[in-house]
Length: 553
Image 1 (cartoon, rainbow, N blue to C red):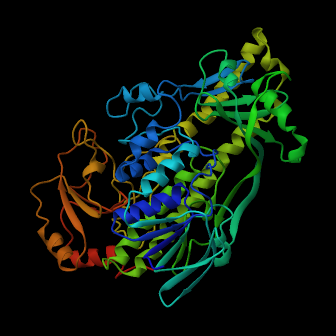
Image 2 (image 1 turned 120 degrees about the vertical axis):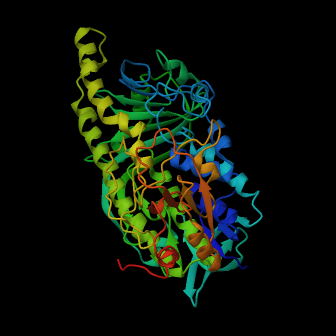
């Protein structure tokens, strides 16, 4: 079997990569060991705004937003002594109905109402997301999906990667392609064959996790239910996530690092989190013991083989950014692969993928780890006094004091504006920098900027049209000054087959970030160059963008 790109793994990262490549005219084969009907993992329950922007471009955002929780189910984050116990503090977030009341998906009054995006965050489980993406991928003629097919090995030589796979029936299948991408998770077989090690922090936290079916759990909440409930009491600490808001719930119980998993009784720890007695019953759909880690692959590429997602990095599950970081990986890589395969750029531009993504992965994963450790240090059950569960004055006072600390630490992870929009590429060989420093960012905040390497700030063209809806599939020169002539760049790009469109825009109302009349935006929505007029040597700029002239790392 011959194709242009082989993707190993049909999780959200692999499927998104395949769909974006196919949308760019590239043939893709996706290899997945699981069957189509096998349920996906339920641990990932947040689709970040940047990821939703990608889904919008692929035509699947509305399906993702409509899945999982009911329209009126609150996506609040609750901190409590147990599900049936006392509320400590609540981070209020909108239900789908409340979110959509904003018209452009930005209902006012919530922590993320001001976010510069056409597609705010969605709380939906991978249990529902993966089938949506899989079925949508079926609609792309250029994608061949091979479920129940196991990747065995690859050979990379003479500009061709041959992947050897095994079908369900035990037959050997060889897939030849120009590039192979490992999106096969934390235990990646592709990464192991590459000989690439994961380095970082091997053990940060431990958890026993159960996906349970029980309609009675919703009735345990004394007040309004919540999408995610963090429980702290003297007996245990853990989390309960509403998967469908009715009968499916994901229950995490924290295991102290000094203890074995077996030291936490599976059923009693669930009762302690829920706040129920021995007569309360549920069905365990799936149970897993796991260790939270912060590990990053030493490198993301070997020859024509690349790593994306958990195959490249394993994050602490803080701020819900593990899967979303993988989507960012593949969207960074996809357009580069397409440009090379279509003869629009040199193979050397692919060096930019690791130059750009590896530092960001290290930086953001450490930020998430530090925040997670800060929360665990303050909330581990060995430091929680029993009075926190009491309804008398001292109990209420303690809950109020702890609640403020918990809110201050955790509000940024559930409205992580900085993680979504703030990161930038400051050492890329295919970006023309102008000497300006990109603004710093925190987990919960960022400053929109058009400094090269930053995400092109979002604004609305009209009430229903996002800037990102009208940016081209390839490079787009956005002009805010109709008097500037850009013909020289357009003609030079056309002469060498470099895809470039020009978009004329009015200056938006909020434009503190706009310092130049021209901004060149890459296919992944990051700024590649800016200026008030075209550079004197437009061919030099195009040489940088296409990899003909690259600075050494």
